[in-house]
Amino acid sequence: MRLRTWRGMGLVVDVFDEDTLDRLSGRAAIGHVRYSTAGDSDPANAQPLAVRHGRGQLAVAHNGNVVNAHALRRELEDLGSIFSSNADSEVVVHLYARRKEQRVVDRVCRLLARLEGAYSLLLMSEERLIVARDPHGFRPLMLGRLTQEEGTDEGGEAAWVVASETSAFDLVGAEMVRAIEPGEVVSIDHTGVHSHRIEGPDAPRRFCIFEDIYFARPDSMMGSRSVYQSREQLGSRLADEHPAEADIVIPVPDSGNTAALGFARRAGIPFGMGLVRSHYVGRTFIEPQQSIRHFGVKLKLAPVRSLIQGKRVVVVDDSLVRGTTSHKIVEMLRRVGAREVHLRISAPPTRHPCHYGIDMPSYGELIANNKSLEEIRAHVGCDSLGYISVKGMLEALGQARERRYCDACFTGDYPVAFEQAPKAEPLPLLQPSSRS
Ligand code: AMP
Image (tube, rainbow, N blue to C red):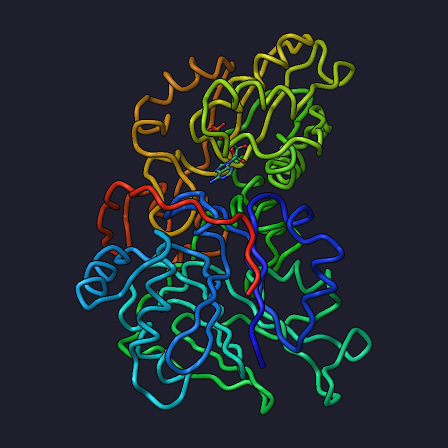
């Protein structure tokens, strides 16, 4: 079987039109939507990476950040490897090509022992799909199965599916089987599903707490717990820690919706959708320029005057990073007549950048790293400001006794040491899409 790849820059719907999808026939597929947290936003860094090596083909899709990628790259370049991108994920294919083990899965188990940091990986060869999760389990990775009605492969056996989030399974009519365990390597081929371990000692679990707070979709399950339930609990705890005398609780849609519901219910204050979100505008957070981010918030969110005018309003959002969104929102609410605006955040202050796969600005841009609570309140312009405490967050997520999360963005307690990335070198311009 030959591997065919199709990659491009932009939105999935624009890159994969009907014609393209029709031409991508086969028994197995992997895909990736890149939100670059390491390496440039450049066509050469688009995934899946696909290569030919001495013994065949390999395609790789990677979610997370390999924190020792630069050291590994230097070592591989000294041995003669030539890199075609500056994505941390490319070290995986070079390490793979150098391994001598007979079985593909053994090569993968050994090579992964060299990586440090966060990775949920899909590797596809001509015969099998191999999926792996780093020993700390920073990023999610779920195993599912297409139900009989939705699809079976040619032999009549149920087809396996793997995704970061279970919401993807619902879309294609698959059911969740289980999470891929931290440190687990699963090989899927015509003989079924076989579990292996990455070589090396076990590591403490450190699932990214920001997945539960913001990143994951509320219709996903993270282990046995739904993301929706977690966010509602966070909102409820936030109401206990920072009550407010108010007439209405409104979320910053969509990220604050569930926590705001939890807050309103717990506080016994009516809930309303006081801000309407335009679904035709992308994420303002990712815009590189502050001026565009400011304008973007305005385009994206609009206040409902009839709900807000004359009211004491509690606004709930999941996080405050640079403070751009909240500042604009408070201004908007006051313009339509809010009497008081109380901002509540269902995460603790974001004080430290993420090195394991979430796009977070540097220390200089993180408002909570540079200002006191009162200074942040004044910058945002609200009447009061309250963040959930670290203890409250962990308790709301059912982790009071046993710590199984990575919460470095709030505490600075980084589970894996990281090296600072050297300045990216410019890459040669490549075709935006390629087919092989
Ligand atoms: P800011 O405007 O910089 O304070 O960012 C806060 C807003 O961005 C909140 O509404 C969050 O839901 C959202 N947000 C927080 N972290 C991220 C992230 N890593 N990527 C995209 N959006 C984010």
